[in-house]
Image (spheres, one colour):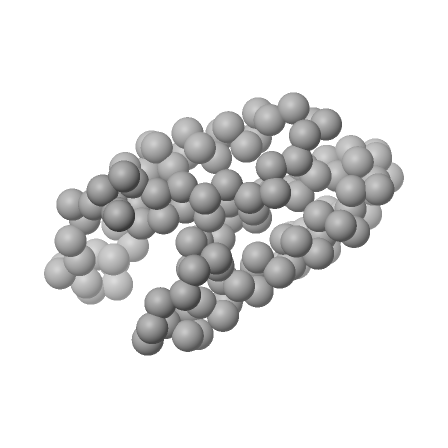
Length: 121
């Protein structure tokens, strides 16, 4: 939010820009026993949707990116060696989807992109 706040004046001045807020599927779907985590991600979703409306008149697109479970070493760094990554997406696939958002034509808005591995069903 602080980064967006710092960048928006310049984006408005140049009358063009794109902001991609990376969140999580927890910003769209809830799970029990994760209320604080879900609330923080829903805040990002709300912030993104408000910015979409506020910045569109300045030709600034705001996109939400909501990846599902993907494999990073964050769990191991936190001391969790029990997490099963068998259904996790490789980080490269997540990066490829994010690159798609970056490359989307400037006159199009993808209001949100939600991705997950087919094995996560």
